[in-house]
Image (tube, rainbow, N blue to C red; front, side, top):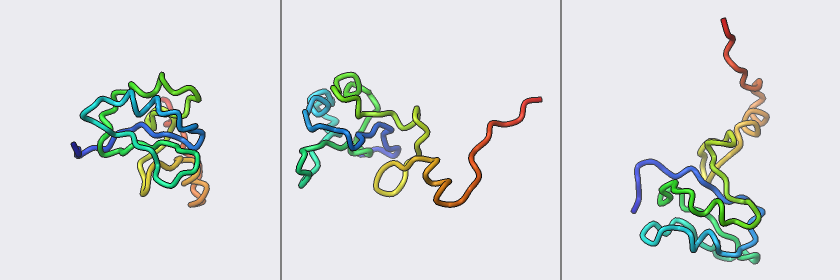
Length: 101
């Protein structure tokens, strides 16, 4: 069920591997999987399969599932990267709000 636009939800490194998110993901979507070889049994989201339903978010007991659009993150190679981290790495000045007037 690949789409032209990837999903926006991601699971951060605080995942405890409980599996609540995997069970919440709609049956035909199957966007959440256990990371192979991860000794903690953590989960990840396949962005190309995620339909942005958000069913997984309220079920996470450690609040490790986030909407990238809400926390200032952009899609990058291998997942999501914080905008501020990219700016610091590139030596770019921080983004400013447009001047009013």
